[in-house]
Length: 268
Image (cartoon, rainbow, N blue to C red; front, side):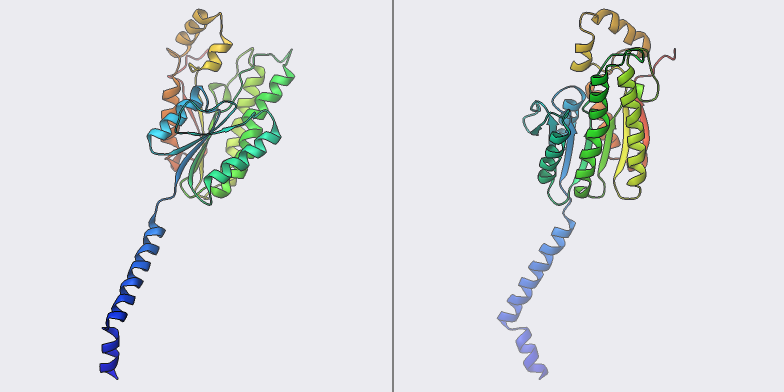
């Protein structure tokens, strides 16, 4: 019996079957060890800090998805065109993003979309306040909830706040309210996702040279640049902020952190 078994095991057919089994096992093992896709999803990625984030992550080998009203200037990015001021549109856009992500991916979700209203407690811009809260609180909440189920371990949710997330100045009532609310959103998200493999950080740039800021100071450029120079030495660049966002996305030890990047501001 032993001789017959030996003959069968060393027959060409048995040896071919064994080789086939080895090939199948090696493919299964290789599939198990393949790193997940790396994808950066950015709201407000068509200009300013958001556009710089798209470029930064693409340079690091990430697939990039931009969710904004206008296409991303980065040709390699997938643009999901959406008016994020509408909650219905946000829901539909979140579904589009989720379909692109597939079943599982290592995702860096960057909440960058914002508005920049100027008003005061005595005369609040109600529509401006509503839009600021929509972009800084509602949109991140809806999109995070929808994308979370696709996030593999090592993913991150990065909120882009402001120096005015932890302090306030006169004349920026709605903006300060919305950016302070984003602090609470980040902290609550951190607690709900604790030990899940997904970390959260709030990155707070100082005054940054972006199209949104340039539009707000139109006609007052010289005075504003003098103010920024006295406050923080110079305006921060979008590329500097994007680089920091890319760094914290890979640092889960920073989970729940508020990180200011303003070149050091003079206290007043």
